Image 1 (cartoon, protein in one colour):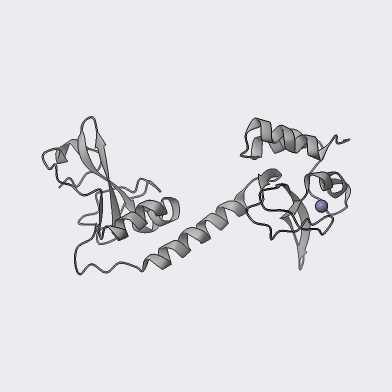
Image 2 (cartoon, rainbow, N blue to C red):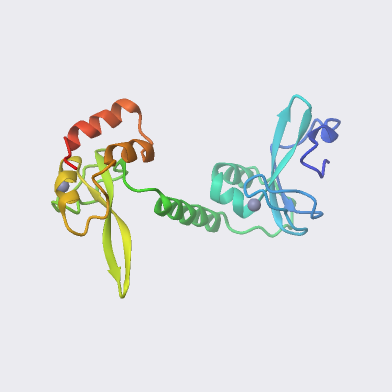
Length: 206
Ligand SMILES: [Zn+2]
Ligand SMILES: [Zn+2]
């Protein structure tokens, strides 16, 4: 089996490769396709079979990197029991929890402000205090919150129609200047939905 993922053609003579291979790295020569760093010998790695024009071989990922960025593949590998008898692998539930944590962290790093659809009906508008319906558009703005002597920008959800009032409040850290441009840049919405959101927000004076 090919050790070097950079040259999948070496494995071309082995047609019977499983779609996934979870194993303990046999050397330190492979590189993780997720984080681009080296995979140390004896570290758990997930191979995802790539059938390319130059042959078939595994592209490797640290198991933990794969769990964070492509959990579907890890779940499939567990389902297919794509590892040798006797190999100690972490419980799938741990990897699923890892993914959730990673997603949360990514979410927290998201540039504010942005518009999104509310994933559930549990959030409340921080401006008017009323709930935001599931799948309704909500605008995420930055509000100043102090932790002891530190002041931080915390994301808050508001109804589009409440954006105007929130932007005028004293502890709002989102600027009115360039607001629409920032919103368009940071949001992952179709243009037509974005227009709908902006219409609901209404004209802003800067
Ligand atoms: Zn990695
Ligand atoms: Zn509101």
